[in-house]
Amino acid sequence: MAKVKMALACSVCGARNYHVSVSKQSDRLTLRKYCKHCGKNTLHRATR
Image (tube, rainbow, N blue to C red; front, side, top):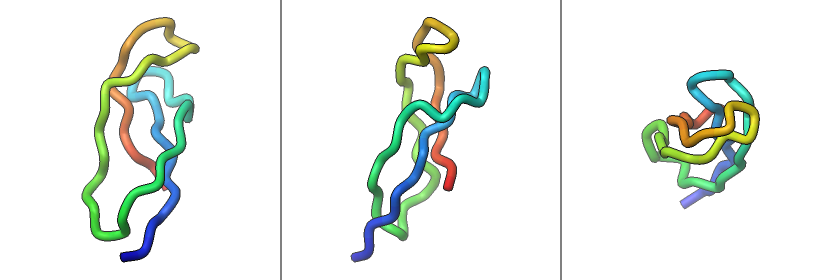
């Protein structure tokens, strides 16, 4: 399976804080991560 680099963007401010490597067939990844711009744990969604 091929791996693709994706960025995780904060759903509140839109900052791209994290980069992950995921399989090409996966759905849009959603995680609760710390956003240094907002200063709290927020929902981060995968972008390309």
